[in-house]
Amino acid sequence: MPKKSLNILFASSEAVPFIKTGGLADVSGSLPPVLRGLGHDVRLILPAYPEALDRMVRTKEVAQLRLPGHHETVRLLEGTGENGLPVYLVDAPSAFQRGGNPYLGPKGVDWPDNHRRFTLFSRAVTAVGLNHAGLEWKVDIVHTNDWQTGLVPALLNSEWQKPASVFTIHNLSYLGLINYPAFSELYLPADLWRMEGMEFYGNGSFLKAGLAYADQITTVSPTYAKEILTGTFGYGLEGLLQYRSDHLDGILNGIDYDVWNPATDLHLDHRFDVSNLDQRVHNKRALQREFDLPERDNAMLLGYIGRLVDQKGADLILDILPRLHTLGNVQMVFLGSGNQYLEKALREAQFHFPEMVRCRVGYDEGLSHRIEGGCDAFLMPSRFEPCGLNQLYSLRYGCVPVVHATGGLADSVVDVTAETLKNGTATGFSFQNADPDGLWYALRRALVCYQSRPDLWRAIMARGMESDFSWHKSAKQYQQLYYKALGGEPRV
Ligand code: ADP
Ligand code: GLC
Image (cartoon, rainbow, N blue to C red; front, top):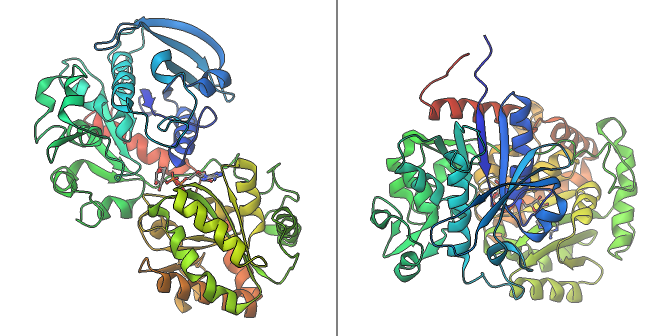
């Protein structure tokens, strides 16, 4: 018997191809279409940033909303992405028509009114979720993501006829904090400001509101779902998460296999798959040329892509560069932007090790594909990692990951050991302690394997390329979770 088709409103502050600062955008752009493929009516809702307005097609106004605490009428625009996914944009020019990025102004500092901007967005999501926008669309599930939409489950909570809510934690470290004077500007129900609600050690947290009120909570890997129950990873929310643990699940992110496919990727000089791995070396040479590094086939080329923030551990790589240098025949390329001191440290490393290190400070989608398609190994020494997508892209592109065994990295990379080599499951190298020595010894193991056992190295690459990290399995897990949030598994 077929399962009931659900109406799902997927609310996010960023989504590919409209706007992206990190992995949340990849997930919000790629999961909804797969859920639609399972037969559900999924619609994405985003703030109408200038980039999103530019990229949406067949745009038309479908509603005008008057929202508490906001002086202008908010327009709700409907359209689709390139792939036909239905999208609503919440058009409030004073909040979202700005340069910079969704969260930061041009100088890299948080917009001072982020609490007002995302309260407004959350109110618009809630109005659509409650069918108060006149769309004649009765929503079963509102799926919210990270602090920017954390208020939605809280606002839904006080309603009688309401959809079920799911709140996904992509990163617990962004708490969405506000102080009491800021809270009192928002015209929110006063009883949200209490310990069982969004009050958080004297401040308020939008993220905590999501955790406290959502019917179901998920995070983006099973291991991270366990880690956040501890003081080390819980950011002070471990008590609440333990209390709500019957409603907490970990579902590993998938990746978009059309966008990230080395056999069809137009960003690559030479496309390849597991049956013609020899083609890969052409991408390596092209990457060495692009970075102005000596073109050497036998040098082990290492890559890093990511936000330059403490979480990602780029400083651990910087720490071991002198040791790497003594080995010779290793090259390292970085692509990232973020903290100024890390950007500066990367530039200095390039200056100190001109034959070995190159960095590109900035954001470059095409280059990120070329790094995955041309490097031999990918370094991801994140101190914590809710899921991580670059190791999944690396696996798919035969770029062997070297990772700290935490969160989604632990759930997706199988460390090379005598046993995993024997049973053919090894896909990368991992280490237990997020410190320079941990990374160094894992990298040493990788280097020895790369240089002395090319046959094994190819087998590890091939195994990673053949692993399945498409959305297929995870989307079904979300479907199960939606039925659970609705109190069972309804069938038509
Ligand atoms: P997070 O969301 O914590 O930043 P993820 O690994 O989940 O980490 O996702 C990061 C996403 O952003 C990936 O798609 C990655 O390729 C991309 N990315 C990060 N920094 C850059 C950059 N400087 N240029 C291009 N893509 C980047
Ligand atoms: C967050 C996490 C990252 C995760 C991404 C998408 O930004 O830091 O680990 O992959 O969200 O879920």
